Length: 229
Image (tube, rainbow, N blue to C red; front, side):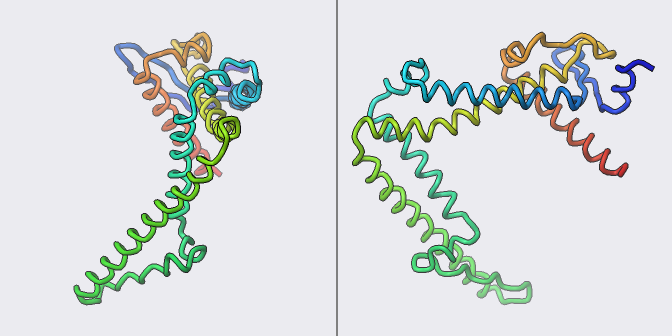
């Protein structure tokens, strides 16, 4: 039995019909999985390096946005951070002065007026947290607005590094997945895409469809393997 045949015994696969074309998809080997992660980490490091390099095109493109754009970017970050904090399950413990504990939901046996009272109290909680979020964002934006142009730019770059690096990681991770999982033949000898870059260049609908199919196959494989153990 050849190495390819042995490998096939331990990897799940399926056939996908897409635009009148058959694509044979199978789960990645451990080797492909490691290489996928390695390439994704490399892509993330490349973005970080470019943002930290004074003469990079990426950094220059951010530099050209201007102060108003930097403040708008910062505001989006602060809104997301404040909203996440306000939805944290222990928010009331961290901010007891502005947010008393949530009311206890009435039991099924409770009267309807008790249910109505609880709903009103929960709405009051939501309103308080929305108000806290608004005030928190305004407070943080005052600090951003007080920065010099250079400090504001560096603050934006610092925040953008992680966000853009995560995006680069996921984009490469998924492109590597499609490249390594899709084949044109049932023997899995002819890759549908010659490279991850080619996989990334396909129509976005097709790309997302393939990724959805792979995640479903991978989840099925993991669930099936866990049942064997």
